[in-house]
Structures are given as structure tokens and as C-alpha cells.
Length: 250
Length: 200
Image 1 (cartoon, helix red, strand yellow):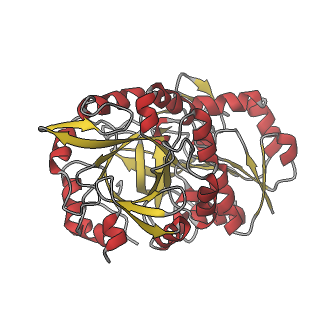
Image 2 (cartoon, rainbow over the protein chains, first blue to last red; image 1 turned 135 degrees about the horizontal axis):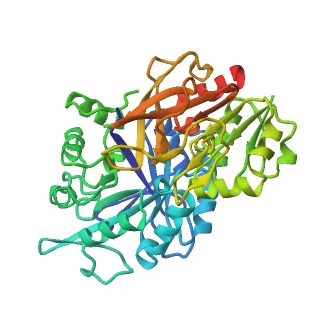
């Protein structure tokens, strides 16, 4: 039986691991390679590593960092940040990524999703969607689209049709707040997504992971809970196991 | 022992190389077959679509050229590298494979969402050496939408179930292949690669 994944998200600013709160205030958490090694020894299911400054600084995520990480970490890695072309994708895969995460470029150039899926297989293409609510409507939050223009429900349908293999959906209001997951968002996308989707944002305790999966998500991602509390991905999975969700335990 | 990784220009070669390095294996990587003739083992990796991989193989002379390179030395196909063992693949049109096993690659027959992504347990069949010293139903990392539902009797080395059963590993003499990613499956994945080198 397929095991439900718990996926730590590591945000970097080009050099250091950082943690944002609601996409704003940052805290520096040190060297990415050390952080990844810690997760590797904990046998986590998968990691998502995103360079959140790469696009606006017009560069890609540092491939030497990715190569260093893959030197001794034999686990699945999803990598994103500033990826703008098929060649960027190819280089990132060659550096050791298993999946590529597109966000801004998917909005700027949606046919990149289709081209990338054709070239590398759709299982390789994760589209990240950041969600901000306004007057009970969920909109895509991105500096490259005017605020409150692109509805989340329309965009996720489009990215699926264009060939995305997975969706990483992040609630901006919940992100880094550790106030619990955005249940309205989970409800909104429940029956709209035919590909696996990973929910990210607000998980503050192990029972939140259970709730996210029971609300339909295929995997749960989190970062603050792992950075700032003593709770480990393994403990989240133990709670999920007790709730009858199939997980992979150490 | 020298492991030749066949670079089709689409794969996650770095990860496979690092995993083999951690086993202290010497690795040669090349897209040109003539640079790989001294290898004792071959790995056909692959992240990519079947269509792109098939095209790359054809440009290198197809099954005939690859058969001439590998002879009866052990080969391990990974993910799309496994799918290339098929007669044909149906991802982005129907394209030829190596026809090393009697089966075709198609979209997985399942009612569950595709791709099939994540950790799933497999059921090894018979005495495939890849699974020596493993638990009865080892768990590996998968990420794919296409695969084999059926091959000739005796060629299925392991099954997996995602809604419906499909073939997780195949073996035809010394040619082995796995649909999952051993290089991403932590300790059990390294054990599988080590088994391939020792017993393949």
C-alpha cells in the first residue's frame, strides 16, 4: 500500500536556511547541508528545498549546494527556485534533484509545464501554488500576477491539464504561523485535483497531520514544527499510523 | 568491478553515481558506448519520458548496439531505464523499447491519482538476487505514471499494488530492472544496489 508522506520543507535564501512567517518575517537557521543531513539521518520520506529569493534575483538555486546535499543523502528531493527553462530543469536534475518545483515561471510561461512534462515525464514536475484568501475567495499569491486576479480553483485545474505531476499547495496565512492547517483551503481543493497534492502551512502538532490527510491531501508538508519544536517527522507518522493512515515508519 | 552508467541525457545520473560511490564502486559515465566497453556492470538510469529515452536509444543504434555493448554482463534498469526493457512504450506516442522482456509499458491501470508517487512496499517473487537479505515486503520510493502490468511468465521479479497490481521489478537472465528508485530509497536502496553488484 502506498504510504502517506510527511515532507519537511526547507527554504533557503541562496546561502542559509531561513524560516518565514506568512511569507514575511525571516529567521536564519544555518547551513542547508547540515539541516538536510539531519533529516537524512532521521530517514524522512522526502524533502522539498526551495530557494525563495532565486527568481527575483534572476538566478537559479545554487547547484553546488544540491550536489553537496546529494553526496550522502539518498532520499527523494524536490528542488525549486528560479527555474525558468528546460535547460534549468535538466541541470537541476543532473545535480541530483528528483522533482522540480515550478511556481513563478509556471505563471509567467504556463507552457513550460507541458514542455517539461513531455521532456522529463510529468512525475518530475511539481507546481507550487501559494494561496491568499480575500472575501472568502482563494486567489493565487504571486508577485507576477496582480493581486486577486487568478482564482486557485481555476489555476490548479489549468496546471493539471498542462501536465503537472503534483501540486504543492501552501496557505500564505497559515504558513509559519503554527496556528493549524487552513481547513477551508483543503475543503476547496478536495474534489478538484486528480493528481497527488501536498498540503503545506500551519501544522503545529501531530494531530494536524492526521487532519490534513483526512481532509484529502496526499501528503503533508511542514517546516516550522520541525525547525522550532522537538516534534519530528517520525512522530507525525506515528500519530498518523495510530489513526489508521498507512505510513512508512523507521 | 567497474560500473558503467549509460547516459541517455535525461536522467538523474548524479544520484545513481553518488549511491554507487558510497558502496565504494568505481563508476564510469558516458553517453558514448565505446567509452563503456570496460565496465563489468551496467546501469540504465532514467528520469524522463519513455519517448525521450527511446529516441536517445535509437540515436545510439537501438537494441542492437546496446546488446553488443552489454553482452552477458549484468545490467540494472531504473525507472524509465526499466521501462526501456519493453517492446514498446505508450508515453507521448508509441515508441520502441529494447524488447528485452515480453511486455509493453502503458499508463498504470488504476483508479487512484497518477503519478504514483511515494513509498510503497513490493512483493519479491522467486529468488531474485536483488532482494537478498531484505524483509519480505521491502518499501521503496516510486515516482512514475507508466509501467508494466504484465510480462512473460518468470520475468516478474516483484509486484507492487497501487489500486491494481503492477510489476515493480523484472529479471531476464542477468538483466534486471526496477520501477522504483533504489538510489533514493535510503538503506534498502543501497542494499539493492550492493546486491546487484555482488550477486547480479
